[in-house]
Image (tube, rainbow, N blue to C red; front, side):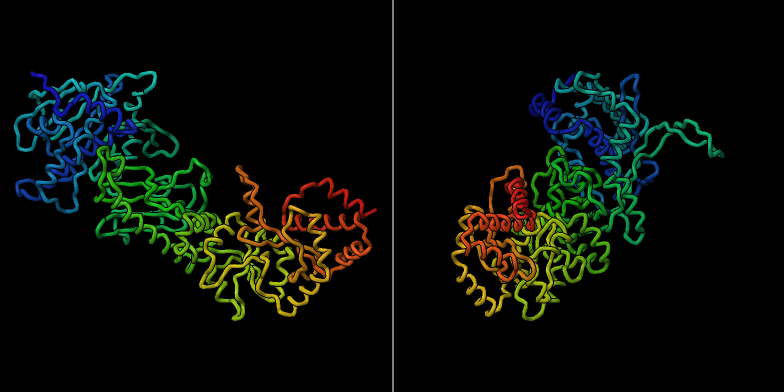
Length: 627
């Protein structure tokens, strides 16, 4: 027996395999099972082209076994096996793939596509094993050979006794260290979990001896320990089944089994796409928001499979942020994987899939909105804010995708409505889509700024989410109708007569308003006679892009930069309070005029839900009035 050296700078390359390429040690089992699956696929292909071979799927399987005492883990397959030369070529030369060579030499049929491409997955075994032994007997050969290695120092190949065609990989698992627990790869529940996670949909049965507690036969109370061989994997994934064979509960069970959520999905999408990039997918729109959805810990993305083998738990590139609530998986044979099969070499194929998925999700939500309004509103209550963030983010680049999915509470309908529904109800003479912002529907309904719009009989959309105004600022218009806040300086509703009257009153009280502005210096931009107020004495309006509601939201942020909206104090000149103000001004009672001005300003702040700058002074001023 002669020890041979690995080729291709093996010591450095093998060290790279073990320590750099794979992020998780458990991947080794996925790689070895995938290799075993490839060996079975090769035999299947040979049976398709050789009439002397009969491929009976019941006789072909992968078996995983372990011996805790001897620290041995075995992966056995009944596939095509390897000759001495193939052992030398496939295992002695790092990064030479027998599967890739087989794939290049043969045109695979019947939907079979070999998993292995790079010939490096096998070496992941050295992450957990101090010795790796491979015994193999090739189809059509009378001889069997054993390949063995302790790592980068080299390997040996010698004849061995093996009755059946196929390959047996034996790992001598490393001893535990201070940093690593290698015992877990000799534990039944851990091995089962890894197989279910990565290799559940390998098309051949993966068998393992299991011990479990079962009810005694003929009893509904007594239990007994059962030990026997069991098929661990599901083999045929739900996404490869015909949609006509599946029921709603099948999708619900899959959602639960994959632990996508503890709720029930509102909708599912079963996609089978053929084209430049072919893929299958099952996507779910959840019913409820995950508890950590708006935390840094939440990770968006879909499970990504290549030929039924899990490659990534969360592939974020498949979903835009505004659809990050969607759960599910994608499986494709067309992905260009990197050497570790954990990441993609480049993302052209992924971009094609992601674009298609985005369109599918949008169409599904539009269908839900149209045909199951109650369910859509349930969904929107959970995830509507995320759609609005999507409108606002990326400088509004996604507004065309999302604007028809938005909903807001209506002042006239007393329920949630879409922008399309609002515009369809607009009177011909109405120029703007009016909205009002506040903490709640109840608070908004009491805002004095809504009086003029309401008197005109126009519908108002109520914005109660902190992102609403920011999203609308990106939309700007919908179906050529501009959005207008009821707190805007110009509502576009004032008649010429009203404007003339207000201008006259403003000119007549020019000095009074100027003195008020001086008293409130730095707090407001102007004091004006209001054309919108009917029953209330005072309100704040704003000028410019930044609204008062935006100011409130920005000021509540941790990095508060003290950004202020340009506020205008509007006075109802027909209110009795204004007459008292005038009397104090005419009488040159500076103390009383200052008192009334500060009270009116603080009233306006409270109406808007803004914090008083000096609550103690405000209460003292109230006491002065009472006295």
